[in-house]
Length: 231
Image (cartoon, rainbow, N blue to C red):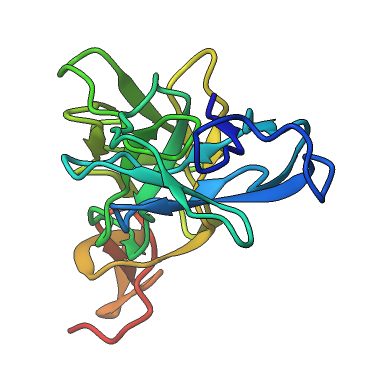
């Protein structure tokens, strides 16, 4: 917790002056442009001293240290020693790439890509195999690897496929204590022609005319009727 004191030229704490030892002190972030300083950034010094007890920085420093600057009107600014911010423990999930481009019989054109985040939304790099995430679907036919590990904080699905037409979404589950995270909704449309299904088999011929006549359907790889023309 940064503690700031108001001092005179002789480095004595000023507990009583024309302002009664009460001054507003502001804090700002220097050194690394990645992060944003959050919390109470202006506090009132009482008897020449003020504590900043709720400051947070939302990005790790990545080898470039941060520095805090403290200012008060009419006074020479003070600067903290350089310091680093590292990621915390895994706390929540983030979606790097949303699933989309779903067609029956084909893998998703855009496979979901997730990452582990700490409370400050910084990516947490974890040992391979320490954490994994599952893709959960409701009332649709799916295939592919529904569970993948996190590697250096990232998890990449590669072969998810959905064959049930309509709008759907994916729920990602890491387990307790993580909250479930749902993807954005996306549509599943029929895929390219893959096979022929006979709906009505031909009957016996009477005077050379089959009765009933054969009735066929062109289907995609997921078993959905293909409406586009096909010979």
